[in-house]
Length: 169
Image (cartoon, rainbow, N blue to C red; front, side, top):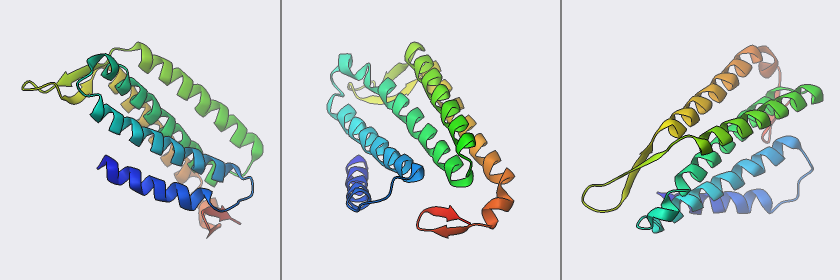
């Protein structure tokens, strides 16, 4: 699945970055989401190749979790930027998301993470530990923020028109 995901993300990268676009915060965030996705997929493929090297595999899952936290932060910020128009409000949300990303990334790097291997050979099955739990709580929190923002802005969203990836109006 990772190879198919990498192929798809490469097609998205080619189609997104081949045309010139005006500087827009939403499009910049979308570009960062695409790049974060591609780096995450490449990391997943690398974890398959370094599966026997336990010393390298010790760090790759934490990097993967931090990239997932970054992706979630960017997606939450993208949703907020799509709904909110005020520059000051967007700046506040950017600082909040940046602070939360840094805080949770540091916590995840400090917290223990255990790699669980298959008993017959040395293949990584999954990871468990406080780092995973904290990352999951962070993702659920961002999803909750996004849902609340969408529900509170429902009236202003319905009055806008969708035009090529942006709500206008």
